[in-house]
Amino acid sequence: MAESKKLHVAIFPWLAFGHLMPFLELGKLIAQKGHKISFISTTRNIRRLPQLPPHLAPLVELVSLTEATMDVPPHLVPYLKRAFDGLQESLTQFLEASKPDWIIYDFAPYWLPPIASRLGISRVFFNILSSWSICFIGHGVSDEYEARTKPEHFIVPPKWIPFPSNLAFRLYDAKKIFSQLEQTVNVSGCSDLFRSSSCLSGCEVFAMRSCLEVEAEWIHLLQAWHHQQQVVPLGVLPPSVEDNNGSEKDDSYLYISDWLNKQEKGSVVYIALGSEAKLGQEDLTELALGLELSGLPFFWILRKQGNSDNPDSVELPDRFQERTKGRGVVHDSVGGFLTHCGWTLIMLPIHVVDQGLNSRILEEKKAGKEIPRNEEDGSFTRDSVAETLRLVMVDENGRIYREGAKEMMKIFGDRGIQVLKLIKLN
Image (cartoon, rainbow, N blue to C red):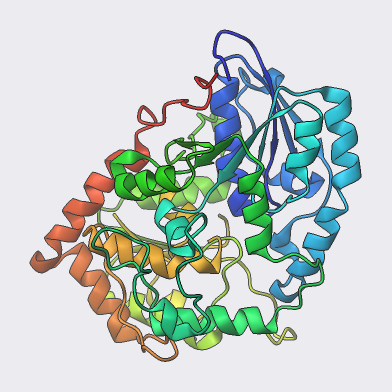
């Protein structure tokens, strides 16, 4: 993308909300340079997107096509992928009519690269996983390495990683992945690995949501593997905070803002488990009681899980909110950060493949601390939640994690680091 020429860029993310936001942030950054954006998603997803700033709205066209995964149970997502593949014809018609210069796409449309190539559209595969997760998967490594066929193969660092690292799953992580793979019916006829491999092999630019300040050795490894494409870290793309006027701030926002302003700086634990991650009743109970036991102020974003007639419905412990009133806030909208560790949330999984790996690396970098869990089933206790939170938030022994998190926050929150390298490509 030459910066001097004003371009038309189509953007086509996967349907999950955690994919939409980094793609939208990238689109907004490109639009800031005066380029036209066609952001392609579903009507429902587009309604959920934050309002575009007025100075960018004329440059960003929102194009509606299908539905989102947020409202689809996990066992039905493969059917959504089959429906997603049915967009091939309508998307082709859009590309033929609009004639964009570039298209930036996600992992799912394996059929898109040859279509774009035929139409003379330059192609960018934008992968929102961390670089270390991509390296762990092994895209681009030689066939000389023995295939990993059971959970135990994934609890040690891959042999193709040429530098020291603790990058590996816990046994419970690996077992969960294998269990989900065994239970998933591949109705679309294409695995996610095939989809992402096809999207990668058919691109001209392999872009990732990462930066050298965080993942230098992993990015360099990917560049060595994929020398036929330009491998470009675009930065972590933190969400922009638009300045809304007072009339747009509802009572909920004002209540939360007022509560946060009364807390000491750096004292509040923020809990967010993602738009699609769901806890079972036992885990939710232990997490809640651990927060209560810690004695720390907290702000918990907890999506409504359903009702008593729903077998998957979960509830907070009896009188939990009454006992923590004034010290904690539980809210159903979207200091310390307790997370399921999807890469998108760290930036504020997505994919199950990256959550455990992100935990390992962040602890390796002293930017976070894992809550101890049962190695076999991944369960945790209220005591382990409380002890870990107090360690990283207030204990002297946890100072190293607080300092590491502050350094990481400077990188994640500094949009000045997020240089539009993509725009500068020829």
